[in-house]
Each structure stands twice: as C-alpha cells, then as structure tokens.
Picture 1: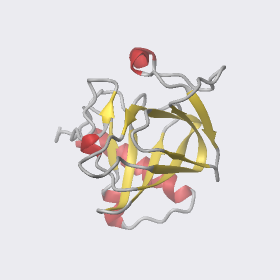
Picture 2: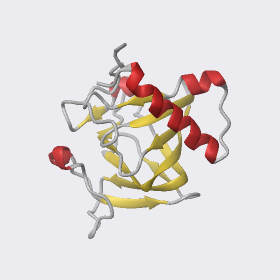
Picture 3: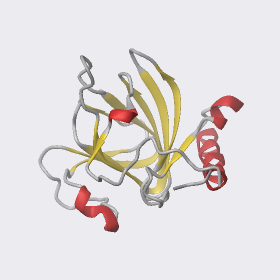
Length: 182
C-alpha cells in the first residue's frame, strides 16, 4: 500500500502530465489527484492516478493519468439498485491506451496483462485509442486497460461513478484502499 509520502511524487508527476497537455488545474484539484495501487503494492505495474471533476447523481467527469505500461486491472461496473451500472466513454488525450473489453479476442495483442496477475485477465478484444480517439464501454462490461510506451492521459465521461461497487476479477484488489500516513 502506498503511503501518502510515497504517493506525493506521483501526484506531482500526474499534475505535470496534465499541465503538459494544456489541462489547467486549481491548487485544490491538484491536491485531490488520487494515486491508487488498488491495494496491490506495485503502483507502476497496476494502478493509476485519477482526478474527479464532478460525480453526482447523474454524471461524472474524470481525468486518468497512467505511466508507461501501467495497467488498470480487469473490472466491471455492475447495476446498483435501480441504476444499470456505469456507462463510460474514454477519450484519449495523450499517449496511447490499449483497452480490452468483452468480445472476440484480437489476435496479436499490443499489450499484455502483468505477469504476476495474468490469471485475472480474461477479456482480450483490443481497442487502441490514440489522441482524439474515444470509445464507450457499456454498463456491466468486463474491461481493463494499459498505457502505451509513453504513458497516457484519458478523459472519462460517464454516468454516476460508484467505485465502491466495482467488481474486479482479482480478489486482492481494494479499489477504495486509502494510503497510509507513513
């Protein structure tokens, strides 16, 4: 688990990556960039930086920043009460992202699951997003994604986000894991 001290350099790097592509943040937004290793203890392999601009009962907007080869593990956004589950659109702003969703597997994948966690990755329909490309992931759809060799920045537009209800294939993951004070 990342300590707050360990997370701070990644928060600063994420803010710089956003600034480098022209995304201006307020000091408060900069301080609220979430750095998560999903409780797995290897941020640069499986994790990401997130900045939530808005998340209310109708919609959500976020920026996702990822380092080269970093992976967000396989998960889905299930129905919660009367809500059918999060519908999300990824728009690549910088770098490349390889998105994997349910469907026929793509031969000759351009990215691969992290070696120590590969057994938890089961969907391999590849969608490559470059700057300006976007893709909408239907509700309750298994998916995972990995940054290209230069990392990436993704804008996410979605229905309400309830991260605490996300379902991951890897039972070790704690999506809402907090950093320790260390």
